[in-house]
Image 1 (cartoon, rainbow, N blue to C red):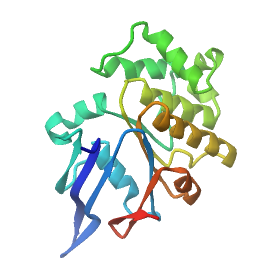
Image 2 (cartoon, rainbow, N blue to C red):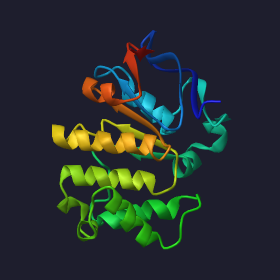
Image 3 (cartoon, helix red, strand yellow):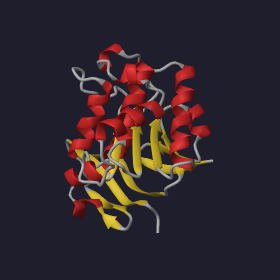
Length: 224
């Protein structure tokens, strides 16, 4: 059984008398311990697909299963709290909080079992991702783009989930920082057994993933 399974999902909207398909009868699967990319041109439906995987939206047809269970039966809000960590291109951190406070907020809302002493766990997680304690106590607006993205990754990991989704996570970063972030995703998958799925326009990132899918005109195919 696959960890995450997408079964015949479609997403469309009515445009006058015509039905516009953003995603058209898509099926694919993902496993833990692997780093995946979904590539495609702007407007190909990549972010829409990621939103469906993250339960930020729901398909008109088809279903998404995690460990054999339909995510709609879990409840979308509960799924987001307990099953998935989401990393956005624009980081989506709480700007008036420090890095460690951003992590603690995420830890406070999950129902997952977490280690005690949340603040120490948060500091250790940030340190693992290259954010020192001194920087962890800074407002996130005082951190560089690459540092803020590391905080966003730490936040996604802090709730003890196995599914990590990222939407163009290196879009605002230079090439050196991009490579470092990709290295983190590889490590999360290969050393920590996470299922990591990254939406990107970068073929270079796709080449570094274990498996890549291509979205074109609403249709999904394996990228050889």
